[in-house]
Amino acid sequence: MVINALLLAIREIRRNLLRSSLTALGIIIGVAAVIIMVTLGNGATERVTTDISALGSNLLQVRPGQRFRGPGRTQSTAPPLSLEDVDAITTQIAGIEPAAANATLRMQAI
Image (tube, rainbow, N blue to C red; front, side):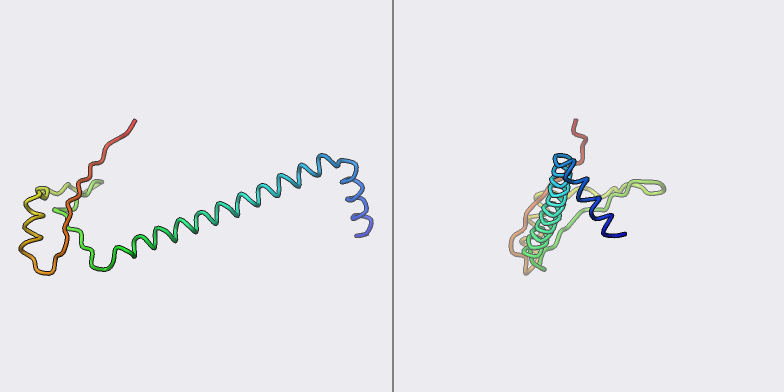
């Protein structure tokens, strides 16, 4: 029974050689694409993890207030930090080496 099925499959592959080869080529390209994408994803994850760990454990971010948006939540009314605040943090707190200001703004890009 199995031998007959195998012989029938081989005969049909020989009859439709072009269709069979194109099907095999499609399967090979699909498997290769999945392998490449998984490898690239793992590599990108490793790179980001390495870059974040290179920042060190002595990194501290200071924000003036947390802003919440959504049902039942209100925005913070804390004033934004200024460059004078960054200078004060650097000069008045012992153990601070470099301090850098960072500004972000959310907007819609069209």
